[in-house]
Figure 1 (cartoon, rainbow, N blue to C red):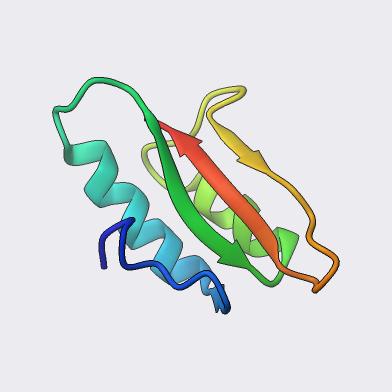
Figure 2: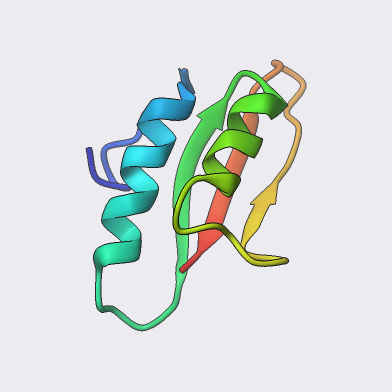
Amino acid sequence: MTTHEIPTDRALSAEEGVELKKRIAESKATGQWHWMGNYGSPYDVMAVANAAPKCEAGELITGFHENGLIPTFMYR
Protein backbone atom coordinates (compact mmCIF):
# COMPACT_ATOMS: atom_id res chain seq x y z
CA MET A 1 0.00 0.00 0.00
CA THR A 2 1.32 3.45 -0.88
CA THR A 3 0.40 6.68 0.85
CA HIS A 4 -1.90 7.47 -2.09
CA GLU A 5 -3.81 4.20 -1.58
CA ILE A 6 -4.53 4.63 2.13
CA PRO A 7 -8.28 4.67 2.68
CA THR A 8 -9.55 7.76 4.48
CA ASP A 9 -12.67 6.07 5.82
CA ARG A 10 -11.23 3.20 7.86
CA ALA A 11 -8.71 2.67 10.63
CA LEU A 12 -5.36 1.13 9.81
CA SER A 13 -3.84 -1.46 12.12
CA ALA A 14 -0.51 -0.84 13.80
CA GLU A 15 0.99 -3.55 11.57
CA GLU A 16 -0.16 -1.75 8.40
CA GLY A 17 1.26 1.52 9.72
CA VAL A 18 4.62 -0.03 10.58
CA GLU A 19 4.88 -1.58 7.10
CA LEU A 20 4.08 1.77 5.48
CA LYS A 21 6.57 3.58 7.72
CA LYS A 22 9.36 1.15 6.76
CA ARG A 23 8.71 1.74 3.05
CA ILE A 24 8.80 5.51 3.51
CA ALA A 25 11.98 5.33 5.64
CA GLU A 26 13.74 3.26 2.95
CA SER A 27 12.98 5.93 0.37
CA LYS A 28 15.90 8.24 -0.40
CA ALA A 29 13.59 11.18 -1.12
CA THR A 30 13.98 14.56 0.52
CA GLY A 31 12.06 14.86 3.77
CA GLN A 32 8.38 15.61 3.35
CA TRP A 33 5.05 15.01 5.07
CA HIS A 34 3.37 11.66 4.35
CA TRP A 35 -0.26 10.73 5.00
CA MET A 36 -0.12 7.71 7.31
CA GLY A 37 -3.85 7.03 7.45
CA ASN A 38 -6.39 6.92 10.24
CA TYR A 39 -5.97 4.79 13.32
CA GLY A 40 -8.64 3.60 15.73
CA SER A 41 -6.50 3.65 18.85
CA PRO A 42 -3.77 5.91 20.23
CA TYR A 43 -1.90 2.70 21.09
CA ASP A 44 -1.67 1.86 17.37
CA VAL A 45 -0.23 5.33 16.68
CA MET A 46 2.27 4.80 19.51
CA ALA A 47 3.27 1.39 18.10
CA VAL A 48 3.93 2.95 14.68
CA ALA A 49 5.94 5.83 16.20
CA ASN A 50 8.11 3.46 18.24
CA ALA A 51 8.70 0.89 15.48
CA ALA A 52 12.12 1.00 13.83
CA PRO A 53 13.18 3.47 12.67
CA LYS A 54 11.74 5.40 15.62
CA CYS A 55 10.17 8.77 15.03
CA GLU A 56 11.93 11.77 16.52
CA ALA A 57 10.06 14.58 18.27
CA GLY A 58 7.63 16.26 15.88
CA GLU A 59 7.93 13.67 13.10
CA LEU A 60 4.52 12.11 13.79
CA ILE A 61 1.54 14.44 14.04
CA THR A 62 -1.96 13.26 14.92
CA GLY A 63 -5.37 14.75 15.43
CA PHE A 64 -8.67 13.46 16.72
CA HIS A 65 -11.72 13.36 14.49
CA GLU A 66 -15.28 13.40 15.83
CA ASN A 67 -15.88 9.98 14.22
CA GLY A 68 -13.27 8.43 16.55
CA LEU A 69 -10.52 8.03 13.96
CA ILE A 70 -7.05 9.45 14.57
CA PRO A 71 -5.66 11.00 11.35
CA THR A 72 -1.87 10.78 11.29
CA PHE A 73 0.94 12.36 9.25
CA MET A 74 4.68 11.58 9.38
CA TYR A 75 7.62 13.72 8.31
CA ARG A 76 10.37 11.52 6.91
